[in-house]
Image (tube, rainbow, N blue to C red; front, top):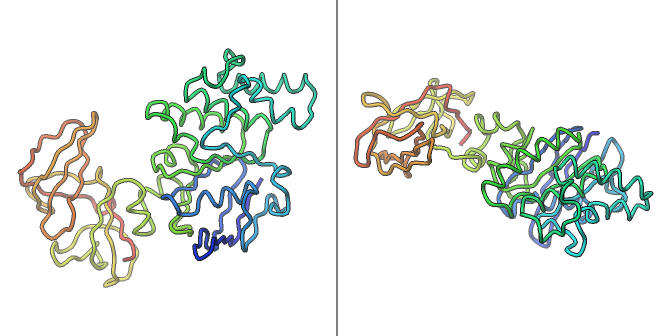
Length: 342
């Protein structure tokens, strides 16, 4: 299966929700649409599901025109953020509902419901009502109901946003396991960078209705292609200046080490992740420790650097040995920083 989205646009009055978006999603891929609220990712999901019609552009599934099919005729299922379970039905009935609408035989329905409940680990809870389940269990019922119809494409709209942090982390692993097991293509909409990075094979980052970058999580994190992606995906430290042979030239700091392919003298940004910066006493960028926060296995150290508009964030393993008010120097390897067109 190949889903092709070609120059799709959608406007609501004077607001452009999608501006000539093009993407290709392959069979069995876990694909994430990532971006802030209002960037257009949910509008694209609704177009795929058939709840919105684009103003222009094409969407094809294995070469066939997906937009020509009514929502109920598309080999697609949508799992809603609210789960939308029927409160008066037990788990098995909720999962069986779509199959009953297709008028499948009772034995076939019973067999497929049993298989999918075993897959999501809810066989023992088939007779319970939704209100008797935890948030994570309700999420799994919604997922079971979505995959029991064996869609070729499953759309998930902020599927884990209603869960607390620990349950959300568990369900991220569960979603990835299930996706691998059932072999269905998943497209998930999320504003949570950590969720997208942990789940997806590839991520499309949206800003104001446009796709900024499409990449695998590691490439997206380590080599952002724009200021927006560098700033939105994870924590980052950004320095402005011009590209030079050895990195970034900046009037306050001289040359900061980085790798990139920008022409010398071109306006540029240097992006370096907090965990790539080391604290040293004798060389590097000079600054004063403003704050130290401990997060279990990692400490975040904020360093004020004269001439830089915001504190530089440094992540160190374990408890930090530096204290607020101390003078430190910050260093990193050229290959650990990237130059972005400014």
